[in-house]
Amino acid sequence: MAAIASPEAEIGAPIIEMRKVDKFYGDFHVLRDIDLTVSRGERIVICGPSGSGKSTLIRCLNQLEEHQKGEIVIDGTTVHARLKGIEDIRREIGMVFQSFNLFPHLTALENCTLAPMKVRGTPKAEAEATARKILERVHIPEQAHKYPVQLSGGQQQRVAIARSLCMNPKIMLFDEPTSALDPEMVSEVLDTMVELAESGMTMICVTHEMGFARKVADRVIFMDAGEIVEMAPPDQFFSAPQSERTRKFLGQILHHA
Amino acid sequence: MRTLGSGDIIYIIMAVRWTLLLSLVAFLGGALGGVLVALARTGEYKWLRVASAGYIKVFQGTPLLMQLFLAFFVPGLFGWSVDPWMAAALGLSLHASAFLGEIWRGALEVVPRGQWEAATSLGLRYWPKMVLVLAPQAVRIAIPPTIGFLVQLIKGTSLASIIGFVELTRAAQIINNATFRPFTIFALVALMYYVICRPLSAYSKRMEQKLLVAAR
Image (cartoon, rainbow over all chains, first blue to last red; front, side, top):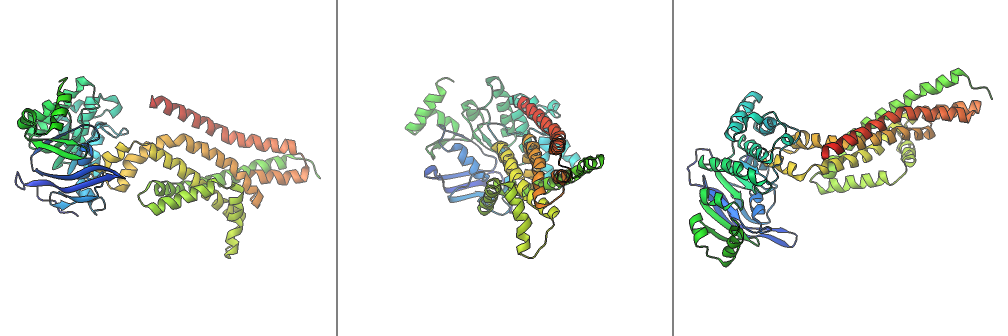
């Protein structure tokens, strides 16, 4: 069992630490010398052009991707993919994907109860009660018995958020959660994420929704070519970006906004 | 030579139970082996992936008849005597393991990677992930080709006649040797294989069509 600090650990203490992390796909240097510390309750937004390594960065945190150099510490435990008990770390880190990745053979409710029952050993009745409460929190209690294919994209993504929340994670990672959605469904998902942010959840969101970043982020990170180019609170990030690359990128994505 | 009597016909028809029994045993043995091969093939241990890939190549690249000969004669070299029934069951099971393993590996790999990622990120370990998330999705995909292979396997049991196992084909040969009515006898045997296999093929086709519709 990996040691997980108690949930009442003080707000503001570091929960994620990345030190000099490097990752390669063959010869391709995906992450370069990443240093990042995230405090408990902090909300981080990561943006950057495609292929900049932003998704890879968060996927290293729960070791869906292995890093080759450097150290990643999650809540006091140094993680790597061969770590015995890596599952105990993963279950504390919720992850929401661009393509939802709901289990198609299970209903919304079953999607939400599977991991609590099989990973945490929660009794079925209790898992279902929690799932219903959380489906209510993401505003789709009436969809509990539908299969993913019967739901709209926005609803599916909210079920996916609920599925992660049912594990009562300490950290939530969002990997471009609105990129695959039809435009009219983006706001329902963002609203859910804003509510989650207001509840004090530690969040790292890879997204280009700059309105969301302005509203909830404590820090905004700009990545390019595997590096963290810029990291600043949103007002500073948007009004006075330091790097030319950040300015150019913001110019491109805010152009039509 | 004697004439073909109703007793001979009944003898042939009754032999079909050995064909069915051999098919069933080979299919069950093959299913067990096939699961292992599919898991080894998709697993994280390189030596298991290499070994299982080699196993599949060998069994897909050699005739079933040779596999049955080897299953029949090789144990004898080590002092184990096997009767034709055991040899046929063993040979066909090993054969089916390779083919079913390959079919099921394919089905597992068709399940989108995002499913694996979602299950992993929820903290599910290998077996719950496999049994509760990946396998249920793979099974739907795997049913048509699995039944298609079962049809091949049932017809393949006729080769067991050559190592002396008396199933449908061997029974027919025995009767034909005594009565020499090859057209009547082998037409009857072919008809019997057809009656067994045709519904399975039709079912497999129907499942396939259903999947195509569902995929739209």
